[in-house]
Amino acid sequence: MPHGERWRNGLQDATEAVRRGMHVFPIGRTKMPAIRSPHRDEPRGTPKCRGECGRPGHGVHDATDDRQRLAELFAAAPHATGYGIACGRGETPLLGVDLDRKNGVDGVASLRALGDEHGFAMPETVVIATPSGGLHLWLTGPAAAVVQNSAGKLGLGIDVRGYGGYLVGPGSWTPTGVYQVAAMHPVAEAPQALIDLMIPKPTPVQARRPVQMPIRRRSAVLTGLIRHILNAPEGQLNNRLYWAACRAFETGVDPVAVTNALVDAAVTAGHPEGAAARTVASARHAPARNRR
Image 1 (cartoon, rainbow, N blue to C red):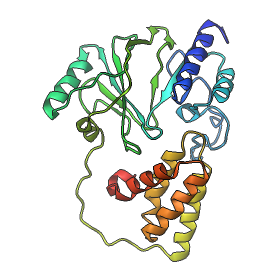
Image 2 (cartoon, rainbow, N blue to C red):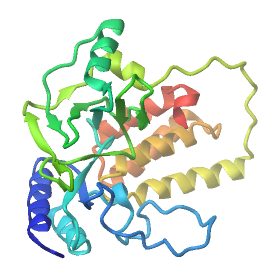
Image 3 (tube, rainbow, N blue to C red):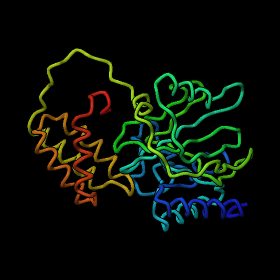
Image 4 (cartoon, rainbow, N blue to C red):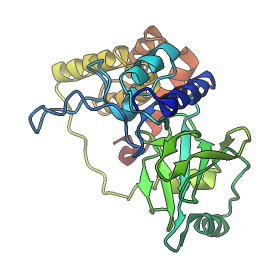
């Protein structure tokens, strides 16, 4: 039933997650976003929108930490039965380790073996039990960590949820059961050895002489990147700043001038100056492959 008991429970649980500082959005019984895309009828090849249009229906890019906005999203999703928690955002981005335990696969054992091989142990943290018998481990990573979503790359039954991914929130209902809290501790920092595995080292490439961009073109690109920062949707400022900084340092403009311009833009958009400076510095020193 639209706006039924499961919908009300989902909104209540999602609101509590927002109170704890998380960015969330409504999902349906299949664990997929509960609001249809407003761009579903657009021709193929139309540039992708990640929420810049301001309308709901962009999945994880709708995620918000504002209660009023959350209520509006749930109102637009009458058949929602739970909520997703966006990963990879903010100063201490949430990362998810999804451990499958079904069909002969044991992600828990795979993670234990991975830790033994690389010399790390998993800390106590939030653990969510999935209806299929698996576990979701909540961890935090360093600011602007370039952790991508992956499935099985770290080991059999181990999936990773980074920027652009999401975790199903506890209390969410699916036809196979409800996601439930299995262990409640403060969200722990991911072991550095695990972070290193999540962010593959770049493959050495032969150095090439950079192609200098014409001065007028460099200025136009930098202006566009600053505008990209100033127009950042709620909750995406730090990620946009990091992305824009990576692009800006490829233009050949003086790095000090780039840093000052981007930090100023971020502060104007509401980012704390110290945090903005750290994000820009991280982008400046990131390996070229990790900037993509």
